Image (cartoon, rainbow, N blue to C red; front, side):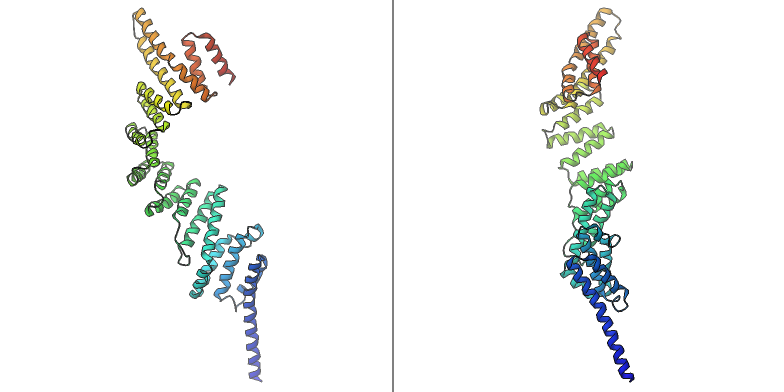
Length: 381
């Protein structure tokens, strides 16, 4: 009798174990059919039962469920678990920890390749929605998955760069710098990481490191235009005209048809109050882009500045006749500004400073009809 009782008990236990394995198989079937809510019910029943909670396959199937539910694109299924892709990752990891032999299944079924792609798609969608902090986290998780020995392939450094870009846009500058530094160490993303690292330091008011990183990038890529332009801008903003001239001239050698570089050179000469040289550079800029606002406006401003210097000198002359001669020469110089301000007005008709300069020049030159016209234009803006 006792033997019969033990035999019956063994059959009951075996049947219970088979039943729980049946729940795992049922979950797999529901996943294939896209019935992810039913798959969740089946796999959670298996996880709760003592006979199947110790099986690695239970957690592997749950990981597959989470990843597939996310990829369904159906919000109802994507919210079956909080942070569903990380839930997939944790369950895959737990399955391998419980039974290392399941690694072969993970690799053969490309589970980590699929999960890595899901993290990447999630990151891109969040980045496009300007949810930069969470985008950074999903990019980082992609890197974590693709760095695993369960992933067939290599970490994509562009994903690391994008993690840095997401952090930069989220104003998480130390995190951005860390990601960009990983890129520079791999040497695969050329000058952009240096530029973003430098600007991240600038955002943190650390000009010393901003300059150091920029020069590190220039040393690594001395013939790359974007790092040279960034250095030019850095030294412009730092009021270091000598270094700004050095880099803008280097840029001119590489891109001689770029009108902006001559505009920058002219602006530097204006800062130094060398207006004649400024006009020369700005006129070269206009030969390359005649309809631009900036060079036309700056040439007009340079002529006005020269004229004002001449008027100041004229005011120091005691002799009335010599004073009138000097004043007339100053007005002749001022008149040279008019055609350039008129061209600037064509490029930007609502520029108040342009209209005000024209109004004041016409008044000083006693061109009263033109003065009244520009007085009205200013008042009507």
